[in-house]
Image 1 (cartoon, rainbow over the protein chains, first blue to last red):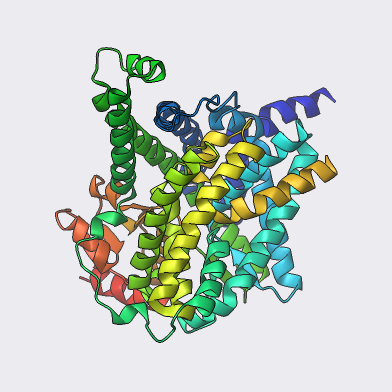
Image 2: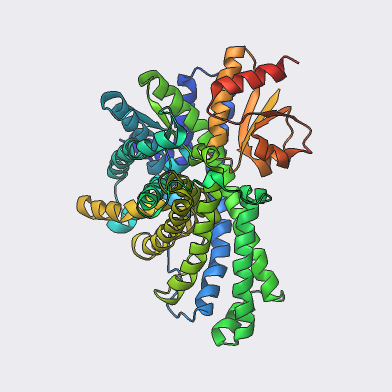
Length: 431
Length: 89
């Protein structure tokens, strides 16, 4: 009994070690060399630990941004209350998340093997984020949940989602890509489908986005570090300028936080901290997903050789590059409008993360263009910003505020926002 | 030999490219250390080859590594042709 307890605490209780074990087994199954097994396992574990440190950098800058904009909008509700935070949440529940990812993947493979839904979800980083966010929702809804039950619940939910989502988008993927070989495995599926629907109803299919000429020189948009720092820099700057001229006691106490440094300068540095934190987290995710996904793929290919890979959303971008930009344009404008509206109505400060907005609105744009041309792409982009803005508010305010709102504010996205309330309901039902 | 597979964000697409490149290298009987990442990270990393598309290659013009252009990261035939061409030199 004590051995089981020891194993539970030191293996299953320590996410980094459990993850290392899963990757180790995956590499051994792939018959990799000893050199590759050691380096792969270590990289996965290190990557996983890097995520926690990056998360703390992000939280530090959010705790400046959020109160600042609350003061700008004259809101007096308490800011983000007490929450566990990504770093601690991952230490406590990371094992459940990692194990649920693995078992959920196996369920995906089995469903692909025995049903008509022959799709294997291979977008590892979204597997990680979705499972983490859903875990955050479950823990908030149900308080503490036993390890086994949490893993079982998440595995089944994720296994089903990873098999069914690609099936739902496939009819449009066939149209966009001109073949049936690749599926979409990405959490932008919901806004992509909504965009396709809006395009059909409101768009003009004849006016295809690829027929128009868009200005060049937008390449810097491709560097996520630059675009994140730029947007947040502008928002921090505007917010800081308002605060400096406001003169309210709330504004004064915020300005004191900067100490000797000019408040505007201090705020702009915070925006770069935010971008830096995201860069750190993404590096960590890249390292550990880079070891898990090849292992998953190896297993899937053996069990379901004819299955279609469900891949990351950029797979559709080359087929309608102008629609990508139009979709993003629609969501960028929408995001700024919603930032102001949501701040002034329900009193929530929407964090417009460019990474989410870009990839999701770009995908929605391509889908919207497929059914509705230029108008379809633009509307799809605007729909994306609407889902992301209101979705973030609902999730942070109602579903995840005591667990990992810091994660939800920048990493949660469309499908998670739409399925979030469902997960919340199910968690209340079962736990 | 070190090869970097590069995409915009460095999360999903470059990983798919890396897996396809590793499969092709296996077929060609070539051993290499293959990594995947975003453009920013790639620009500061030492490598022999960088595999990416023509759009992203523009940001890597100053890099010491030889750039191998692949437009469709999911097309193993294109990857094989591009790699064969460069690795045989």
